[in-house]
Image (cartoon, rainbow, N blue to C red; front, top):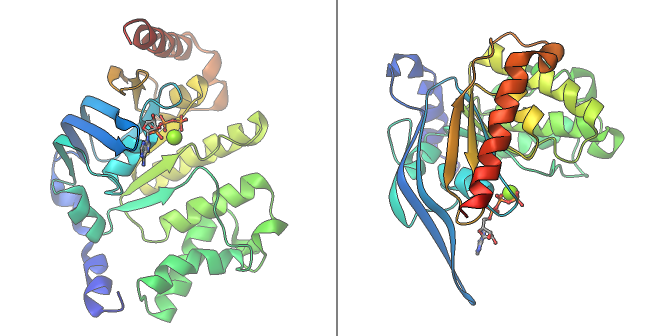
Length: 278
Ligand SMILES: Nc1ncnc2c1ncn2[C@@H]1O[C@H](COP(=O)(O)OP(=O)(O)OP(=O)(O)O)[C@@H](O)[C@H]1O
Ligand SMILES: [Mg+2]
């Protein structure tokens, strides 16, 4: 991987504004079946979806409905067994080669023997970035998640919420335009989660990235998203796609407004409907 081309592609990665209204992600009739020793597991069924550049999309649905599978398919970590899936107009594999994604896993997954800066540097090292550029990128993403003073600390010296912010910083280091986040705040208490939700929204507003976010929390999905995708139990189908009527500017107490409560209600109905005809 230590070749010059990699470093290059990435230099051109920014000229994406000219893409017009090309969707960031487009799924048409996507099916995904895992072949297992116990027979096939139908994880995704006829998934149709369009995500515009700059959207904040949440995926919500019961455990095992295929949310992680869908995210992994978008990241080219799984391959659909039917239908078509494109990212920035090309196949997920091509998008991956062009470094279209940052991926934040459910557990922070930081290496305890590396400092915070060292953890963020790791994927950049693997990709063979020049030293000076690595340093500049690390400074920038640490500032974005407000962890600049913690660059030299080890993960175990940080709180759980700070570790999650560090793992978000690591995913941001490539400056990919799509950020895939799989229940990044699932393990945190509600107060920390509220704060990180606010910070994530402001980060999204500042960076104009496209974010695909998996969650089990209805308030979290409604608070964060421009688009909420409700999924049914396995095989995962989309039961509802809700375009949020909420303004982009969202103080936490927007959660007490009738508009917010109405969207939350519709998500709940979608989850119920999925259960009934599943
Ligand atoms: N590599 C795999 N091989 C076989 N089956 C798999 C594999 N990965 C996922 N599955 C199955 O596919 C289905 C969907 O799994 P997935 O992890 O996408 O669910 P999820 O919606 O993310 O659930 P959760 O909310 O619990 O994280 C499950 O039935 C799971 O057992
Ligand atoms: Mg999952």
